[in-house]
Length: 179
Ligand code: SF4
Image 1: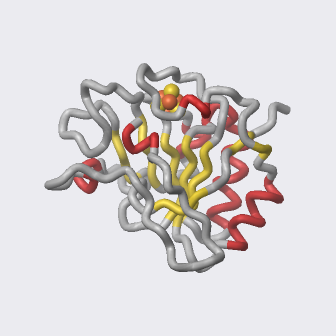
Image 2: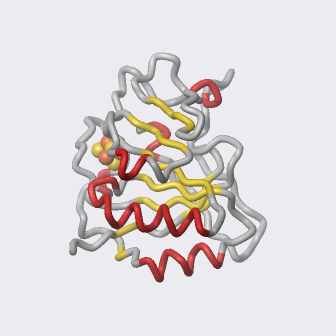
């Protein structure tokens, strides 16, 4: 089985409105968006394997501190992604997938609380753009939630620091909000 590699997980605040999420960026993306901000995700050899055991260890470490798990990609390895989503729900966490594709298999979407679809198109902008092609939806209610990303001032694609030594956080740009 092809390994399900991820970069170092980070705690994020803006990708899923009203949730504190642990974010796993899965490598091996084949969408190939022009202007992709995260080309390090293109090679499936980047990152390290996210086994179920390692995933559970992260969830235990962050238990009580997060409310949601978000995957940036990984739909190209559906069985492994679904395993992680089922585990996350057993930890009473909400689940989210950021995909660059327009459609996601029901095999995956039935395990999602939230789903973002759509490739990055620079001329249309990301979720914080009224003209975006991307859609962020609550999969339990069907409601399109793009309005939650629209602000007077553009979203700053930075994660906030957490005042807790047990937490890591990403100081970098969040590609899939813009992507
Ligand atoms: S923007 Fe996201 S979906 Fe598009 S190529 Fe880059 S990593 Fe893949």
